[in-house]
Image (cartoon, rainbow, N blue to C red; front, top):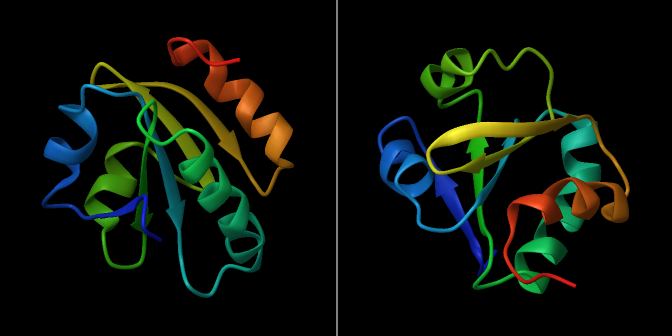
Amino acid sequence: MGNIIEGTDFNFQNEVLKSDLPVLVDFWAPWCGPCRMVAPVVEEIAGDLAGKLKVVKVNTDENYGVASQYGIMSIPTLGIFKNGKLVDAVIGAVPKQHLVSKIKPYIDNVN
Protein backbone atom coordinates (compact mmCIF):
# COMPACT_ATOMS: atom_id res chain seq x y z
CA MET A 1 0.00 0.00 0.00
CA GLY A 2 2.95 2.32 -0.63
CA ASN A 3 1.03 4.76 -2.85
CA ILE A 4 -2.23 4.51 -0.90
CA ILE A 5 -3.21 6.72 2.01
CA GLU A 6 -5.53 5.56 4.76
CA GLY A 7 -8.39 8.04 4.90
CA THR A 8 -10.25 8.83 8.11
CA ASP A 9 -13.00 11.14 9.26
CA PHE A 10 -10.20 13.33 10.65
CA ASN A 11 -7.83 13.58 7.66
CA PHE A 12 -10.37 13.41 4.80
CA GLN A 13 -10.51 17.17 4.32
CA ASN A 14 -6.72 17.55 4.07
CA GLU A 15 -6.01 14.36 2.10
CA VAL A 16 -8.96 14.50 -0.30
CA LEU A 17 -10.82 17.80 -0.39
CA LYS A 18 -7.69 20.00 -0.29
CA SER A 19 -5.62 17.79 -2.60
CA ASP A 20 -3.95 19.43 -5.60
CA LEU A 21 -4.26 16.11 -7.47
CA PRO A 22 -7.47 14.30 -8.40
CA VAL A 23 -8.24 11.65 -5.75
CA LEU A 24 -9.66 8.15 -6.08
CA VAL A 25 -11.37 7.25 -2.79
CA ASP A 26 -12.04 3.58 -2.15
CA PHE A 27 -14.88 3.29 0.37
CA TRP A 28 -14.56 -0.28 1.70
CA ALA A 29 -14.90 -2.55 4.75
CA PRO A 30 -12.89 -5.63 5.83
CA TRP A 31 -15.91 -7.98 5.67
CA CYS A 32 -16.84 -6.97 2.09
CA GLY A 33 -15.95 -9.63 -0.51
CA PRO A 34 -16.22 -7.36 -3.57
CA CYS A 35 -14.02 -4.82 -1.73
CA ARG A 36 -11.29 -7.46 -1.43
CA MET A 37 -11.73 -8.27 -5.14
CA VAL A 38 -11.24 -4.66 -6.25
CA ALA A 39 -8.37 -3.89 -3.82
CA PRO A 40 -5.58 -5.21 -6.13
CA VAL A 41 -7.03 -3.13 -9.00
CA VAL A 42 -6.98 -0.01 -6.82
CA GLU A 43 -3.37 -0.78 -5.80
CA GLU A 44 -2.33 -1.20 -9.46
CA ILE A 45 -3.94 2.10 -10.41
CA ALA A 46 -2.21 3.82 -7.46
CA GLY A 47 1.12 2.61 -8.85
CA ASP A 48 0.34 3.28 -12.51
CA LEU A 49 -0.87 6.83 -11.89
CA ALA A 50 1.48 7.82 -9.04
CA GLY A 51 2.12 11.56 -9.22
CA LYS A 52 -1.04 12.15 -11.27
CA LEU A 53 -3.67 10.67 -8.95
CA LYS A 54 -3.86 10.32 -5.19
CA VAL A 55 -5.50 7.14 -3.86
CA VAL A 56 -7.18 7.09 -0.46
CA LYS A 57 -8.88 4.08 1.17
CA VAL A 58 -11.64 4.80 3.71
CA ASN A 59 -12.80 1.95 5.95
CA THR A 60 -16.51 2.74 6.27
CA ASP A 61 -16.84 0.69 9.48
CA GLU A 62 -14.36 2.97 11.24
CA ASN A 63 -15.13 6.24 9.43
CA TYR A 64 -18.89 6.42 9.03
CA GLY A 65 -18.89 10.22 9.21
CA VAL A 66 -17.32 10.62 5.76
CA ALA A 67 -19.29 7.68 4.34
CA SER A 68 -22.60 9.14 5.50
CA GLN A 69 -21.64 12.64 4.35
CA TYR A 70 -21.31 11.32 0.80
CA GLY A 71 -24.31 8.98 1.01
CA ILE A 72 -22.29 5.79 0.60
CA MET A 73 -24.92 3.04 0.70
CA SER A 74 -23.08 0.24 -1.13
CA ILE A 75 -19.47 -0.79 -0.96
CA PRO A 76 -17.13 -0.82 -2.63
CA THR A 77 -17.82 2.66 -3.89
CA LEU A 78 -14.91 4.24 -5.72
CA GLY A 79 -15.35 7.98 -5.67
CA ILE A 80 -13.39 10.36 -7.90
CA PHE A 81 -12.77 13.76 -6.32
CA LYS A 82 -11.35 16.80 -8.09
CA ASN A 83 -10.97 20.30 -6.65
CA GLY A 84 -12.68 19.22 -3.44
CA LYS A 85 -15.80 17.84 -5.11
CA LEU A 86 -17.08 14.34 -5.81
CA VAL A 87 -17.18 14.36 -9.62
CA ASP A 88 -17.85 10.70 -10.42
CA ALA A 89 -18.24 7.31 -8.76
CA VAL A 90 -18.21 3.62 -9.56
CA ILE A 91 -20.15 1.19 -7.36
CA GLY A 92 -19.05 -2.42 -7.10
CA ALA A 93 -16.02 -4.40 -8.18
CA VAL A 94 -15.23 -3.46 -11.78
CA PRO A 95 -12.42 -4.37 -14.19
CA LYS A 96 -9.32 -2.15 -14.16
CA GLN A 97 -9.97 -0.74 -17.65
CA HIS A 98 -13.48 0.38 -16.68
CA LEU A 99 -12.18 2.20 -13.62
CA VAL A 100 -9.28 3.78 -15.51
CA SER A 101 -11.67 5.00 -18.22
CA LYS A 102 -13.76 6.73 -15.52
CA ILE A 103 -10.66 8.35 -13.97
CA LYS A 104 -8.93 9.54 -17.17
CA PRO A 105 -11.16 12.55 -17.90
CA TYR A 106 -10.18 14.06 -14.54
CA ILE A 107 -6.42 13.61 -14.90
CA ASP A 108 -4.13 15.83 -16.92
CA ASN A 109 -1.80 14.24 -19.49
CA VAL A 110 -2.73 10.56 -19.15
CA ASN A 111 -2.43 8.32 -22.19
